[in-house]
Length: 391
Ligand code: HEM
Image 1 (tube, rainbow, N blue to C red):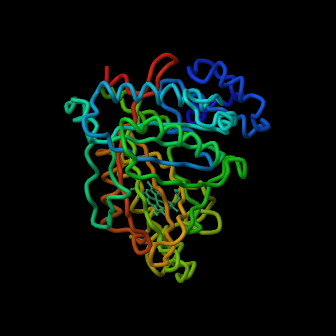
Image 2: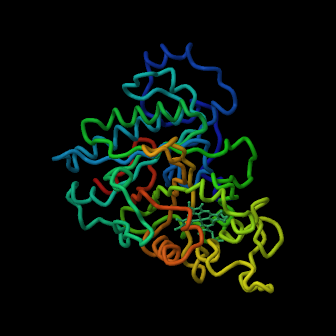
């Protein structure tokens, strides 16, 4: 119920309050707008107490960009960038061109677009507010399983663009990155995909290993707000996010017999139900044994990942990636694991520590990138994202 609360669907361009892209640019592009089918004209409100793109059900396509602030860029300049980004994101998500839109016709098809901004650990020093680093928001510790590469890790700023149309998403990314050029350089950019939301509304998607992925995720829980949204200082109404690029050894995985693949997760491949029986959404029985021992083995991913005493919960919203082959000819395929939680240190880190210590999946998965961001609260029309920190 709450999950859907932030994703009211409107008609492209009908959402009030967005600032930019009016006047001649708009008039000039209206005729060339692509046909507004229902999927293409779907809008997700940009304004509100929380940024869109966190609890919004995942769209088909996502691009994440991590940026580094240029030397000498401080609070005033970051504030200018955030005002511009806010104005342009409000326009694009409503189906209107951005301020200096290089291709205004591409803005006319919002297709469920969300644009979400985040601050990396290095931003706080740059804006002269080291004391504003949220409690528990530490640069991600290194885990024993990590083989992190700089080219997929870190960053002072995050732009997360999600939507149901690849062209809309690419255009929004371009607008955001061109706008950022005077202030920041792009450190990395990663693109991911999911099933199109329209393919099977309400059903759980699969990842590239073939598993049903996303079953146990807070959705309608009574404490959903406490799990996801921070109530601390300037971050109140915001959250923290970690993005981990986890490469999959799909060739190795393909050689594993299906029953062993199922034991690695603790769930059936066919429908995602726990190995102890029932349907996908029935509770797993972690105590059940048969003549081999525990039915859901001690190192099964779901046994290791499940919340300790109900406390360590996170909202997962990952995307698959497929970047072809690397320079050695091996498939460069995996998961852009994204999770959102009120406290990074209290909720995410304990789960990741457990998985690093023991998780059958580790045989076929390798984290190669990691970046953590504080996601500021949303804003109302006339406001801007980041104001609670920077003003
Ligand atoms: C559950 C796959 C990495 C946390 C699951 C499930 C699958 C899966 C198939 C069972 C279905 C579900 O409830 O969604 C993967 C793959 C990964 C990966 C393929 C890496 C490539 C991670 C990481 C974390 C994580 C890095 C957190 C640090 C969880 C949690 C659950 C889960 C919390 C739900 C456990 C429960 O309470 O039943 N994952 N996962 N996963 N995963 Fe992962």
